[in-house]
Amino acid sequence: MSMAEGARVVRAYGHPGSARTRARPRTKGRQVDPGAAGRVRALLGDRPRRRDLLIEHLHLIQDSQGCLVPGDMAALAEEMKLSLTEVYEVATFYAHFDVLGDDDPRPPPVTVRVCDSLTCEMMGADALIAALEESVGEDVRIVRAPCIGACDRAPAAEVGHNQMSHATPERIATAIADDRTGPETPAYTGFDDYVAGGGYALLRECRDGARSVESVIEALDGSNLRGLGGAGFPTGRKWTFVRAEQGPRYLAVNADEGEPGTFKDRYFLETDPHRFLEGMLIADWAIEAEETYIYLRDEYPVAREILIEEIARLEKEGLAEPGSIVLRRGAGAYICGEESAMLESIEGKRGLPRHKPPFPAQVGLFGKPTLINNVETLYWVPDILANGPGWFAGKGRNGRKGLRTFSVSGRVKEPGVKIAEAGITARELIDEHCGGMADGHRFKGYLPGGASGGILPAGMADIPLDFGTLEEHGCLIGSAAVIVLSDRDSAADAALNLMRFFEDESCGQCTPCRAGCEKSVGLMRRPRWDEPLLRELSRAMIDASICGLGQAAPNGLLSALKHFPQDIPNG
Image (cartoon, rainbow, N blue to C red; front, side, top):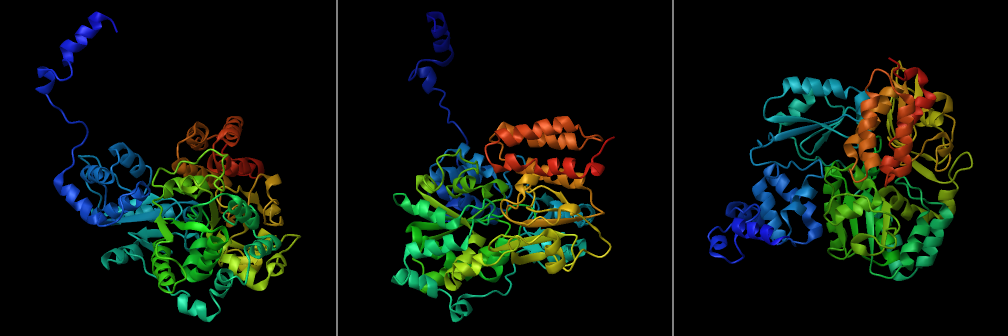
């Protein structure tokens, strides 16, 4: 800076500490309103103000006030000793937080979220949304929502926190009138019934020394149990890797199944939670975890109520140390199903996937070695240990081993959770477990692995469904979410629905995914698809995206181009 420029700066602003500067004191940023500060302080009570609890505290305010207003956000930042930017960047990342500006009106007291993912769209979600927008009053807000894990009951909606099956305008209106906006807990196998059937005997054997860690891991290896959240990594090997790392170690359970078409973990948590919890506690014992975190998607309020109650019971019965099992609530972000994004969210941050390596087994939660398993994987652990590895490995068809839990939805008579042998084909699954195709529908195609798994025609419905059998066809089994299409469905429309989902759910961290999904949706909405450009764009996304979301997002599009050319718009 020249002397002349320096003189201009001094004339404009004065020297630090000069009379001119002191005469014009200004405070920077938004000042905390005392009323908001008292309200937020009362909501938080004696809860710790740790950084990793930011999302939990945002939920407290959202649930209490129905939204997040600037005053409360500033008060929360002050209370947690965070910058206001940190609070805003997290709150605005997640779909279930209503972050308002100074002049924004508060949302209506009741929010109805209508799922518009593929199965619900096939079953009339668009017509339902249109009818609701015409019929509801000003005190109700209608919101399009991604998959809420109720594909077997499509079209599905949430009235407040009450998930509604086979939703209609009339049923939704009745629920609002009756103030049925909270979760309704169904009957499930509770602690006493589970223990009466021999539950937690295996955990006690492990803790009492009747079983060694080595024997447990050997049983898992022999059973061929793999990660059933989608990746399919051998479970015993993963436990071994984490156990070999220097402690402290953590266990993180991925219960954020947001893949459109998937609802198996919800089924296990809402019907037989203790089988999962025992498997989880055995994993905790095996790796000597400092703490165990369950990251549960916010769309599963019933499962959350069950887990809160049953974890408290485990603590009361002495099967879990108080506070050693931490239940964390997601906030509406599909990307947090990616393991490293989930860890970021547990730490109270935006769910941005981490670069790998290092892998979570080495540097995971809070920078420590972390074992990550999903709900279904842990659910099978007690049965494998009780019945022996051969029991599980002995199941299977077509040379495959084990059992798989298929979430089946779409044009079948009996959708739902189907526990079947690994290697079963889509045709066998439909005929043997789903009562065949729905009346008036002819089998046209299927998604073998949810939104990320691609689309195959009915002529390829005899491929064994398992890890490693579908990749050569450009598809994946993933979390085994099978969506069945009929002759009344367009594969091109299905592919567009899937790409719209990925466009909405991309975290935005990397350009290939962020821009690629948006550009693909724009091209797919045109009267004529530019196939060379779409293929070029897909290749860039597959090769250059940071995580599996962007890498798998084009699978549905590429499948439609390859297997359903008759459905592709050509102007």
